Image (cartoon, rainbow, N blue to C red; front, side, top):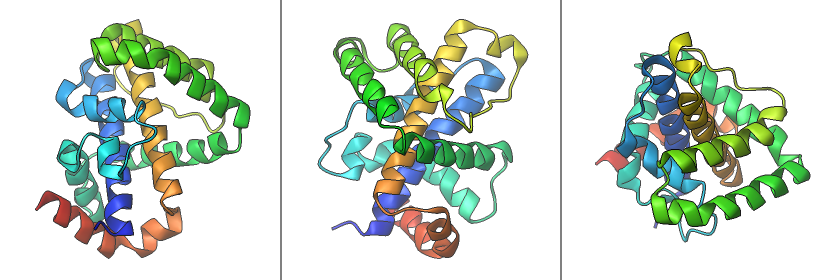
Length: 203
């Protein structure tokens, strides 16, 4: 039986994993497909039986769990990642108060889901569709998430689409975190419990 901290930790790991891939693509023009896939697939798993199943199993979040563990232990090496995470959490709060945007995103995901099922969530056409959905809906809300990186890559449509798709996945994880009772205060006050949960998941 998982504890609330275990479940919240997985949601935070999903958030960290999605945003770390955003940072990687923005700097190098390429993501790590095996790392990006679980968080992208979480966008389509709305009715999973458990938090772990949202991501296809807790093992799929090992990269995000390690990132989260490093941050909680003050060993994080990317100062932009926590800022992106805070921006995603703030954006999700705004999104949660916008029923029209929520309906548009839900309808868009339902439309894209068959293509993701047949081609895979990391297929360029699926990434383009998810990126367009994000651009048409969530990106209009404030505060906007500002991604820094190499201008050469940030000017490429395929890179922009994948970044937006991963930002959509990050908002999905931020929503899950909030639905599980997560908050900024809870994050600050329960660091030890979250770190213990990270260590349990990583074994």
